[in-house]
Image (cartoon, rainbow, N blue to C red; front, side, top):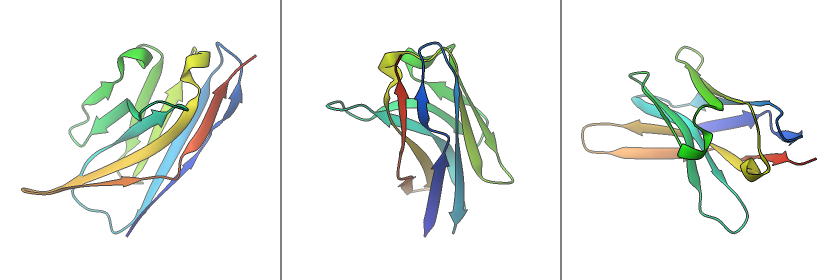
Length: 119
């Protein structure tokens, strides 16, 4: 079993900053990527940012230049620094951990943390 525990969500004014953290525990091996996705009401879940085990990062177009993802390979944590927040960033943010092997891939999700950007 894998557990993902997220923290750091909340209410922030437009232009503000937040930091989201996610700690993974349990039976963890062959991590191929960790990252964040988000889902706003009435919308599909979308990519925010991921970082692979090769340290390659991938960002959603709407957050490029504003958000930064980082990963601690020893502690199995992933952090999302969010700057210049906009009302359209309001969503539930989900931590993701992906493990994979030669012929399999498995995704694990956190419970989600609410981010609200409003004045």
